[in-house]
Image (tube, rainbow, N blue to C red; front, side, top):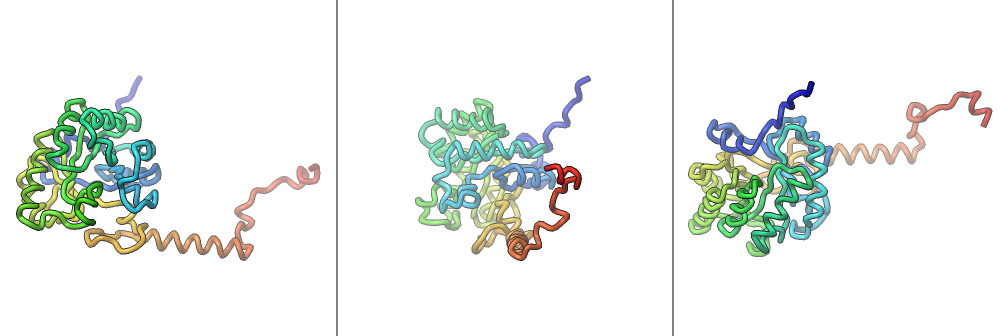
Length: 281
């Protein structure tokens, strides 16, 4: 007799439900199977296959070069490792900006070919038509305003957005356009906390903050930043909950030392053969 699956732990309608119930939404980036397994086991609500993999996995200086095929590849790995969280895939640069038709087609590939539950894309009012078309096609969408890394050249660098009244109003107008288009949630990146608080209050959809203060409906961090795998100085909004870089560095150093000193592999790390069988060789 067939059994009924318990279903996912978090779904797209839960964005609205959590906001209404004042429950905080937890999101973290994941780029591969083992990270997805960890995030899923820890009970994270949303696993974001961010185009930040360009920086933290592929070693690229910006997110712009990452391709659709690379994003699909990593999304497939994450969906294989996930059982209960919601998998949202970032749409890479030029996968949705050229035309609405391209946007819908590429967004659909994340669901059809990679098993994602929905997609995320950057921009406000200018991408609202694409968002509306995706939602109409049955593709759930998360928006993203504030510091949008794909537009970093336009901003003149990685700078906080919304510090001026006009810029803050632009963010609100953009986020409202995404809401009207049918987005289920909006990521607010590098936005002053009071501006993010107002956006969260005025929007009917959930807000997910990254460098946007504590008033957002949820938070997202890059996995490598959170667990201390990133090198160099972290942004001020990052909190490191572990130092996996230090742990891994020590482990690798000890391994190299033991191999060079002839202490690894030891007797317990080798396979044996019966003495009689050995003599028959």
